[in-house]
Length: 189
Image 1 (cartoon, rainbow, N blue to C red):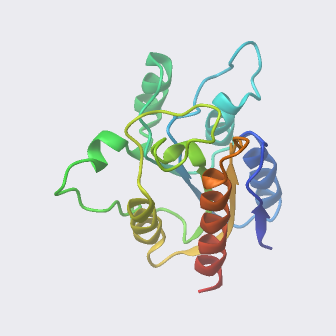
Image 2 (image 1 turned 60 degrees about the vertical axis):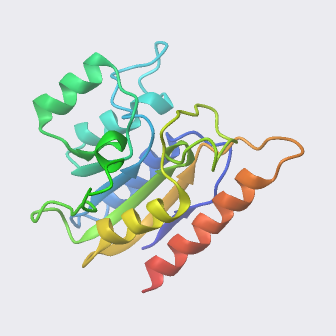
Image 3 (image 1 turned 45 degrees about the horizontal axis):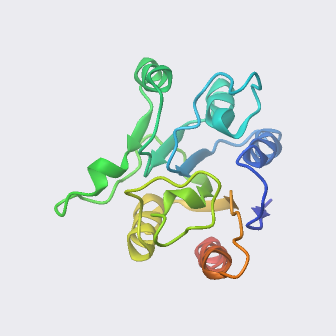
């Protein structure tokens, strides 16, 4: 089974539906998350299914995941990460010129679902997102990190979320579409 979501106005919560479908298969898999935000809040604005909570819900389901590009998280999210010993390569770590691309932990499942929130990109690359954060990934950095994270693993599905088109400026839409095209190619390797 291969799951795939088009770039859209859908918030990252759509990822949870895909994860639940994969869990129903009873085959081990992990999630690689590209995002500016950790999305580990227990609830946001009273909603436990907010886009700011999706990775918390995935962690509660016992699915291993690896975060890449995070540069904004609350104190509670940082505490949850530490308590659960969650693996990540945050944007500040990746910004160093000598940073080695991340490798997933050796015990990480071979089957990987990748969720890519477009705010993982720097706003200069992806201005059309609802929650832009400075200091994000650039195009070739993102491609290099995707390849490094998926080395020797099988991409079983992916989503690209949180695109917020800007009238009169198609840069974000084209960037998201090109990312989807690239991820489709990676999945078919």
